[in-house]
Image (cartoon, rainbow, N blue to C red; front, side):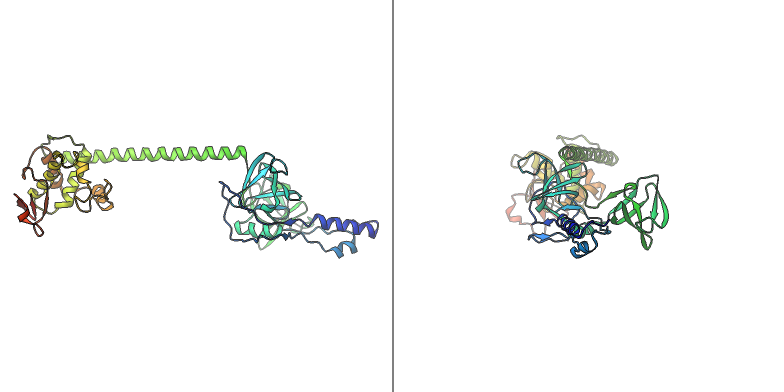
Length: 394
């Protein structure tokens, strides 16, 4: 379109220049709970002029601005405040907060009003501090580092053209066909097409940025509720899995006790899990000792349960600090290595037999509550003792 006079051309050119030259101010810091993909692109904190540039002399000389192809981030803004940017109902910090844009989320920059920019991001519309956004070349660099922009055909079919003026038809794309979007020109979107590119009407494709969008307050609450429900379900699934695992473990132990064939009439209360624990500590301390040595270790544990100087449970006695070397973690639980033994079970059936017989009242060491290797025993310190295999019991 030619202007009627050079004066009009100059005025129009100047107006276009002013319109196309927003400023990208310094980066501000904020907080968010909604993370966007991280980027390695860095921005300084000084005020910088955005990359909308127009050749003023060309405007004055020709009287019009040629429509040029731009990148996909022209007219867009990316939130750069970490971790999120507040979005207000009006260009005023005292106005209602209507939502949030997480760091690296994208919006259409509708209007820049001084320190504020009106944005549309997903279902969120409102005002953001301009200093918490980046535009144009900076947005292009940041957005590209996050991932590609996709254009998905939403029409029944979309015509592809080799040129933006639609003078050379190239192909048709079916509904759902996805392309990498690389530029904008007027009503057309440029997409990768083989080794070159093609153009498609913007209203026939849906554009999706890797940067993601902002969230309204309602969407944030829905996301929180969904995350809470997912957490609850995960915890419930974990509890159920633990319950089933415990049932299977108990069934396995009870089956092993039945297979032993020992006449089992316990003289003290002991669960199947405690019988298993006792069998495993027998294996741990005397796995390769003769059966009488295994039975003696079992009775040391049970004698301690009956002795007021010790804990009055099998579990408490076995996991007492500094008693059975390597068995306890020092806090009343199994060490990682002993837990592996519990999971695998005693290596010989004799260990389980000795545990069950000792619980049934078969005692071959009387009231002795301690034992140690014969190689380090201090016999002078024992008022009485008995030696079975490689251990002295006292």
